[in-house]
Image 1 (cartoon, rainbow over the protein chains, first blue to last red):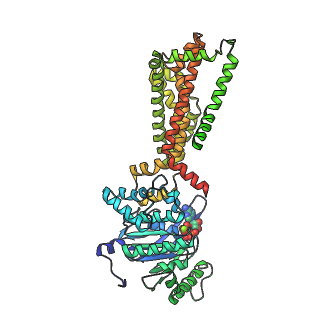
Image 2: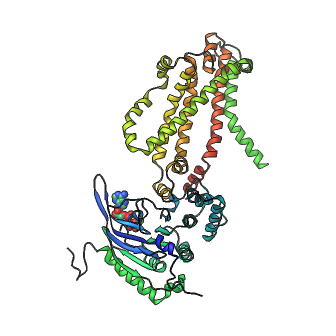
Image 3: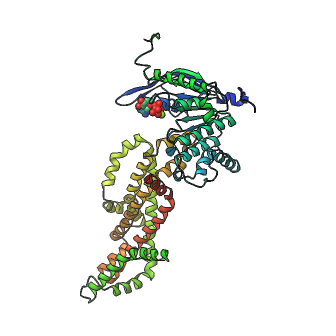
Length: 283
Length: 261
Ligand SMILES: Nc1ncnc2c1ncn2[C@@H]1O[C@H](COP(=O)(O)OP(=O)(O)OP(=O)(O)O)[C@@H](O)[C@H]1O
Ligand SMILES: [Mg+2]
């Protein structure tokens, strides 16, 4: 078995999939209150890398993701995908939202949901059907193409959303706490599914979660965010073996170390703006 | 066998009350004591004579034609305007007071005005139907378009659904439950306005015929016209039910699934 020691992705993908976030800030301006959600975020996710973002609840993870997706204009800073500034949802980017039930078209069947973005891409019919079939099979839903999303369980619905994102063949896949609402067993399965699909397809993945274990288990890099107004506290490189298994990997001493490291960072994140740790001069 | 019995029960429910009412009418009017409430057999006889004759082409078909034209005009205009206003908050705010005022006007009041402008022909009658029936469609469409789920809209944007594709594959289907609700209300309004328009100034149509019978003291014929109108309304409502279950099958399933949780 070959290990996946930094196999460099094809050159074209390397250019297209690189995600750069520079000085990103977002202040929500309402009628009655303005709220500084994100203060200053700078990081890079290399093409073909799987990076996880963790942060306390309300840290602005969704805000960050929506800015990256081009759904929300940042107040300052820039997002670049493959060197191009992101001003609107770029082609070649797929998003899996946390609210899977609300992100599937209830009037379409499972197969039609997966196919719709491909129609938009103007793919010929045969190519569309091939992709739909393959991606549904990849997430283990080959037998329900004719069902409507609301006839499926939560875990299955989320898998439909993942299949739709995969069929789109994106350069970058953004996932916002995609497994927060499914049971532990399904969650483990979906984690492994994400990992193996990423392994196979080699796209850039940015995976947002509030679960430390999940971040360490899935990521090659874990970005830890502070509480709002958000800054990047630290980035932890995950040097676990490329092949991960729920039991074996989680039992590794290294896993426990990384977990502890991220945990400590998160603890700091929660009080980052109120009680700066000693030795760090802050104005 | 069980299914047959269940079918019989449903049929009994469907026809039970109408049968009882007809029987009541028959019992009360049996002795021909009331001039204005003729016995059923007379009405039935008049029904056959009156409507399975030249009147079918002279009155019933023109009425239905105006209804169809006015109703489709109202639905098209209501959906088009509703989509426009639903997706532009500025425009909506600007037009809201005027729309509220227009909606508050009882549509028949426009008939005298429209007679001046459009004469007494079909144009006037169809316009009356459109101006009255457009409101429920318009208001429901606005509300349906506004309530498109945010996450769904974001999803559509991410996958490149913009412009016409967005309208066709996101906005209209998402608003369809509201639009269909408006269309159902509009249907009964359109039927009422069809009759009223024809009662005012007309030389054909169901409303015209009923008024004509009344003036000529052809009481059984008048009643037969009223029954025919009831039947038309009932038939249209059945047809609409079929249409609704076709278009909104997914919506019923979704609602049941949510309720089951
Ligand atoms: N549209 C908005 N207008 C004003 N404030 C907002 C808006 N959206 C989010 N916020 C605020 O910005 C902050 C960050 O929200 P965000 O949803 O990005 O956090 P999150 O990290 O995704 O949280 P969670 O882990 O709970 O999903 C929150 O305090 C929230 O109240
Ligand atoms: Mg969030």
